[in-house]
Length: 265
Image 1: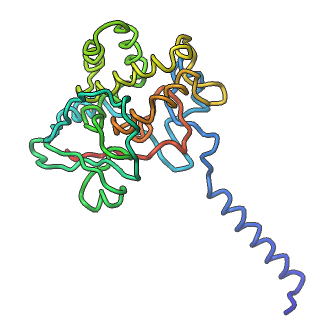
Image 2 (image 1 turned 90 degrees about the vertical axis):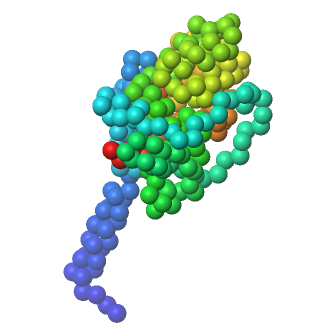
Image 3 (image 1 turned 60 degrees about the vertical axis):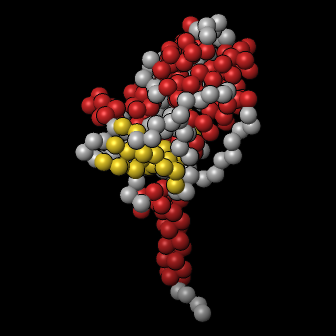
């Protein structure tokens, strides 16, 4: 079948336009960073933002009122205290999951936490996704209020570690708990601090910016991520990345999970 010369031009234009549209519709996450930079971050606000355009996700900025409302919720089955150092055991196995809030009684703000295989299953069950990955000791809404309300919580935890370098372990836990964490969550943070001090002391003696100019983590944070991160994530459950909370540490957008945090009132 032969096309007139003019028809061939029309076909080529249509192909070019459709190809151009499909390319602009796909925004890559590569090279984009998620966070709320401060002076210690080492990256500027134009390179690291609380928005990931590749996934059309913006980190929720909680108001003081919303943070207080998170603290009003009461977990019906609180987590037990950690009785042993989880860093003495192998890293617990992981599998795709989300942790969700299941409301028991809205009038009294009573709830429990439950792990679901995915966000759709959780929402179909009437639950509210609070972070990706399985629930852990930091999955509570009380702990979420700390993550969301303190942009540089890692620095405060590190300060607790320095002030209690040679103190009994329980004093370190008490210092971290005073930041607002529940005690089981404060415990895993404390174990993380001690393990990082053991594995990364040389890397963390310097006061380097959190991120290098290319966005990669500082030697201290990279060491902590490698040696302490896997156990912390498995036991804590909640991290800032899997909770969709932008912090003073810039993370690659492909590492961030989108969570809306719209809980009932």
